[in-house]
Image (tube, rainbow, N blue to C red):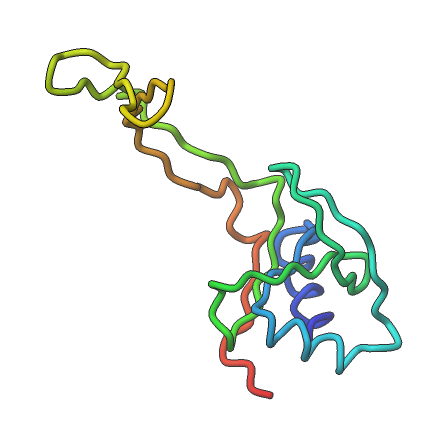
Length: 134
């Protein structure tokens, strides 16, 4: 099932997914189904987070708690980017200043308003398996 979806993505786009995203339940199902082919590998994510994750066919399987429990996603991270709106501004307070002094500590706070969104250059290089049951 996983290999079929990866092959379909490679046939359609010529690109190989470099990340599989699933819920914790689906990650356990992947491990139970493909146990002889699974290996563990340390992984450093872009924010500096470290995770010991499963690897299926040299592709890391990342568990995300907010991912739908009956789906599995195949991601090619090279084609995702963060789009940032150019309308960025500091939010001023009641007195018109940007820096706000905290009453409980020697601390100044500031609020930046920006609009951001994720976009994909090449959607054909991504994949999704819907409605996976146990």
